[in-house]
Image (tube, rainbow, N blue to C red; front, side, top):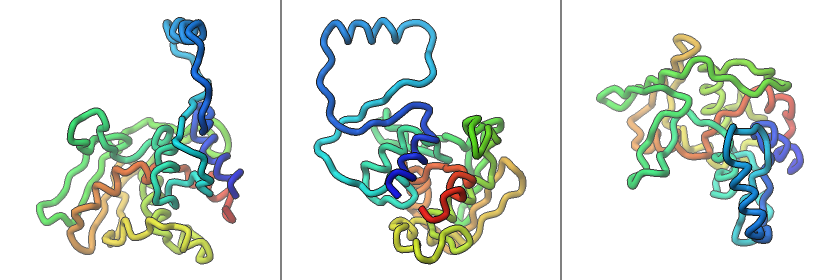
Length: 212
């Protein structure tokens, strides 16, 4: 199972994530790295993340994980509908895959307008298809462990399934619009949408590994 989810993360990444401590680079190596960084960007490479210690996290599936390290790994590589601006002093919520959103005065309806022309990587099983409102619906339902998506035997693994328990329905007027209707006003709904655990994974990849 670990290998499958590591494979999932590697699919979404355009680079390889390796976790652990590594020796500091020598000055000459650092200088070479700076020189290589100049000029035109290059696809690929290796991103190294340093942790404070070794822990077996069991999964890098951020839809399931309720703790920071896996969500951090995913957040560095997976887009969200909205996200936090980590460079501001108050971490306000800003657009990511959504261009904009509106909330009705009673807090019961959220309408997200999605970016057009955003595509997944051009590799199987998605083969460069376009991101649409279907993907947003799938993300919310999977995190919620919706029975139409998640096998009943895996429900307990989705420790964040209460994040969207206030959602009454999800409507998709077109490919680039998502309307989320609430059972009652939920002050943390947008916070949950903006966490790194709410990344958009392609449905095809999950369905290729239904037992994972």
